[in-house]
Length: 110
Image (cartoon, rainbow, N blue to C red; front, side, top):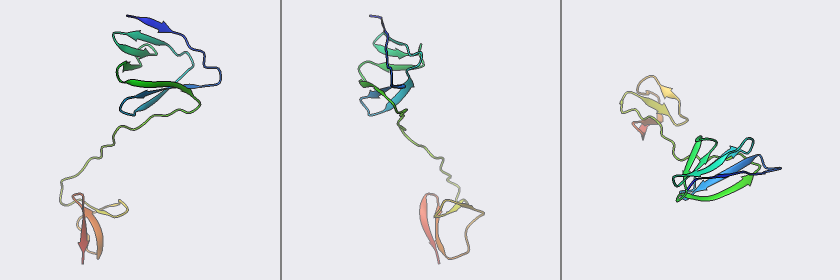
């Protein structure tokens, strides 16, 4: 089944999609195209594709929202990399008393 929908959003600049895992994605309603093809909602000629089984909501809004699914930060396994508690990287192991971060753990230097 293939279909094409036209929308009129008047005062709403965004159409927001919500998936069953809680992720949100807003797209501009200016020149918005929606199509259903092969069990997916295709937005703006393929810019976004949502499987119909995972799409829980679609609504017009004045806010541009996007959820962050996950954040990954590189971790150094290098024992020589030390950080202060406010996140500043040090040049080697600290010699001043205090609490520091090394290999993702808090370390107390006495």
